[in-house]
Length: 218
Image (cartoon, rainbow, N blue to C red):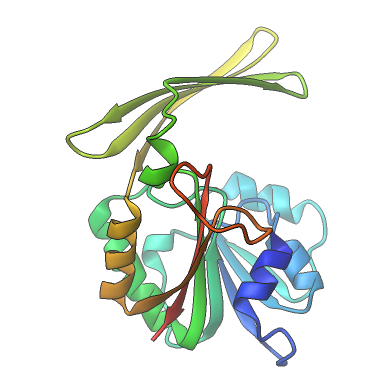
């Protein structure tokens, strides 16, 4: 994924290229991109994820901040941006539209924005699964999904179990079609560059498990 972003964002050879990582989590992508030479600023709403990222030293050109994407400020300072980890669609539609406007203002002309999500309608609905279960490293994970057709919102009850311990929380994610996403991006001032199903540059098609969409600021 880091090499995919390097290809899509470009400009790494230009000194001081500044990239924004939206919902950076524990720095899974910010860290390797920093090692590649990018200056990366990451923001995430979860202080726990930021603390996890800071537990190991970051490259000197990587800064991760506890911040809400809805409060993004800036004036043409970023040379590129990305939002990975299926982090798109968890805020209200109006907030998403406002965020894209703020992002446009924060990016330089011809800067690119890359979104990765598994909750685009063309991915999620052809093989909708109301009950997803998996086990990883001693944890049992279960997601109970309910799709509201009137609002196009996916409601999920997450359960994570390890031994006798269980954590439960609820998720709410807006499911956009490709057409809706493209119209939102166009209204904010971004034009399409390409749509991919994986970091090996396979083209996105109906039923692809996830979307990696690349846009450019006009």
